[in-house]
Image (cartoon, rainbow over all chains, first blue to last red; front, side, top):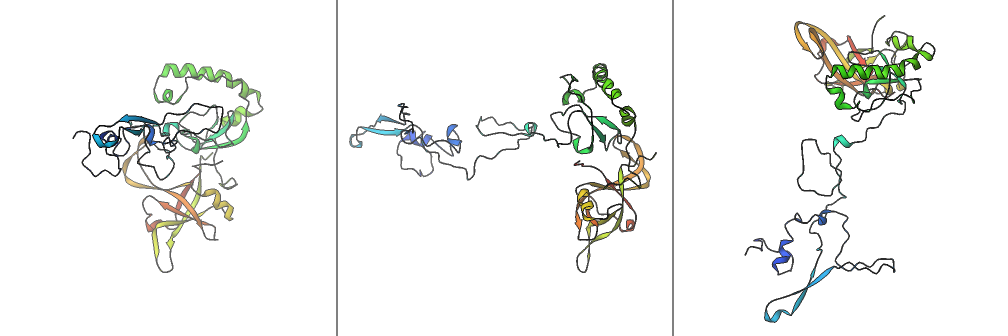
Length: 223
Length: 110
């Protein structure tokens, strides 16, 4: 018969409706949540004012002479599978897409919260440690969403106040990947024009930013 | 003005157990580190053995040149002597014992 599974039923339900409920709970979304409240019985809410009862069962007629007239069928069956732990957070790689919209909490890499160490705040002077610009001192403007580079930087204790500097909002990661030279120049000017006056205002800061950081015999790694 | 952004270190030898050496881990003595809290600062930092050979090789971000690198990472401190264990991606050649290794300042936690 179409509705029946060939495998031995492990439930005692005899009706075809019961067997549709499944192999591993894939058909029903709600049953996969580990924290689904068990709706087998009418929900006794603690609040006596709440009179609404969740309709948990349905009475259905049953064929056959000797089967009794009706049976009571649960509307929400107990899940056949409970995960052993709370639903784990999945690290979905950006390539994978799940077609079934399960209500698990997805936490793909793009949505990870990037923490920034406390010593780096907007306006801090940083020293870049690697790459073409190694040794240069720069002003930290803002943290981009993918958190790159900040391991390769030392935060100095010098800070300038850039709270009034408005950084163009389109400066995000994707912006830096493209080579739109004209647009970059315009934005560079816009940012520079706001920051340069602040640098010049602080004593000796311009010269400091101009200087290159390096280790020497006197100034070693652990000093 | 030199642009050195790395600390000087010497490759002292390989890791030893009681009777034999284990070449997969190296021991490094970092210049300027005289106390155990100095090694604590260095943990996790990248190290490089830089050397030159006859043939040119492609360099990321630069023209092909004769410089080559074996990269490694400081894994842990070595006992109470102020040295560190370093795991290199390829084991260091034994003829480098006593020679210069660079300890970078990144990944930085300051």
